[in-house]
Length: 591
Image (cartoon, rainbow, N blue to C red):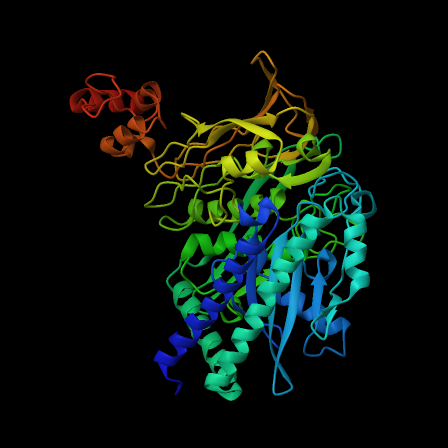
């Protein structure tokens, strides 16, 4: 029986989350690249001195679950860790997600003891790849990818930069000042947390905090065990498929997830071993991504309020195998795109499998991939003497999946981030980069229909002002759009396109690096999320609201949801014809 004061337990737990949020605010305010200070493609976390995940606050699931692996690498590679050190880590073979996620690790000492490690992870716009993008789906291996890899390299000693490492980055990266600004922001975030943790030690003492850590993990484990004990018993297998990547994978990538729930033991097992081997492409999952994405699918499906820490993880067993596309890659298999495409398929396949098997649990499939709405764009800026620019745009909005009792989240983004990222400010993008944004609007009839519908996607079109712009993107969901569950419908596919100077629309390859000239626009019709349950059971008033929002057309309301209106006019007076709706739904069920 615990004797630790439960009020103090809650106070310290929330104080740790507050420290992480202060880290996040530091990165958001101080980061130089748009991918950080607008899109919020970063996360912060705290781990214990013995490398157990402690606190993540609002960290992106794909970033923070597995942070403990980074601490393990730091400790394994260095036997002289000291106060004032900081380490740069982006090695996907030693616990990082993918090379573009640079992580600063700062060991926190108190009275000579390594009690905590702070971690600030931020996606970089450029990392020295062979091409100006941080996603290289067709890289045959790590060498072809070309990124700079830092396996927990000491970048500060005694609170001062190791200039050799900084010079390496500034020499190789296309936008050195941008990278250096982001590096300083990460250092600032990690050092801010170091100071706050020392203040916490001053207030409560190291022994109280050590006791808290064990009690907090035990509490989290009990919470997870309680949730699992209410779940149905059984073993299920979910299957999904990523779109083709010709010529290596012309039929796409099959994804299999085996899920075993044992309520008596309070354990869930997630088995990813029955998948294909690593491929000579940049889409292989790192160990961290395979683990965090399948766990994200589980947490989405049962109780998103469960703390994400080492105590909770004691109740989840993830089985991986070496040299597996969703397992443990062997160097030099490239993990360039590990955080998104295949990883997102892991998330949605897991949550849909649970929904298919057990009513009241799980979700439909959400949108996947980083198509043109999220492209990495590059070029020369004529406004600044042709200074090079490289950055990822987050202008699109993909639809979230429906659940048992809720519609999909409109600002979902993608499946590995669960709506926690931001969308770029059009005005700031147009000021910082030589681009113009023609449109961002919701895409009508793109939602997966259901008793609870998926969210619609968006339509985006943007391009350069006066000089050519390169754009690299990795669309998924063009061939295999997000699927519904329990009778719910699939969402519209994700479609890349180009608008020429005359406004004519031309299709683009789903995965490509393209040049967009002045007067042309890069376009993307983003997919929505899958639906949950029979669309003919959706309340007519909800369909009316969707029609008034211009998310569902009158025709789709009538032919898919079976809802008929008195007059098809988009005004507040729009009214459901209840008798005609009953007849239409009966006819659709019979037909």
